[in-house]
Length: 182
Image (cartoon, rainbow, N blue to C red; front, side):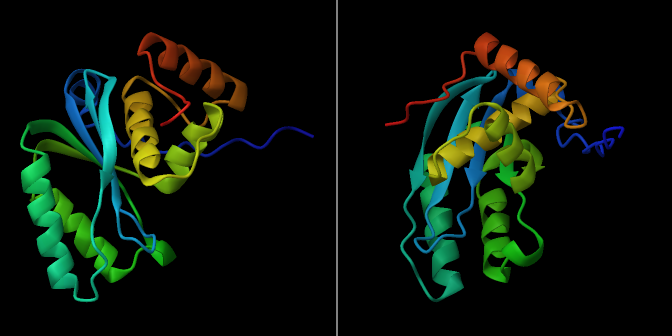
């Protein structure tokens, strides 16, 4: 029986591939978890520079949460980034307050382009790179790796072996950290 042809995923970086590969990226994984913490990672010219977690106190009032996010972002991320990369949550995973939080993240940082990566995209890339541990900051790193992979020519419609080969070569060339994580 012939193998089923995979549907090609649109390249989320096609409008800014050069900026993704050569510029400064800020990647944010807006959490849906109980803590509300958000993972972040910074990349410079394709290299992972720093990563961490924005600790956002749980608050019932969304307005107060948004104020906290704004203050954290303006204090922590003062660079002018070429690209802001965020996880795109939609459908059943996207509560209204999470969508609003994503807007606050975008509004409170200086960036030239925005790239939205779906969970399915970055989780497939993480799987092809050998998997990852579930942690907000590590999720942000893999979201960044996914943006870089697409900017470098990755195509999710390739056979799995070709995807793995491409990603492993890219990870070696760009000296990506794949673990262990502190």
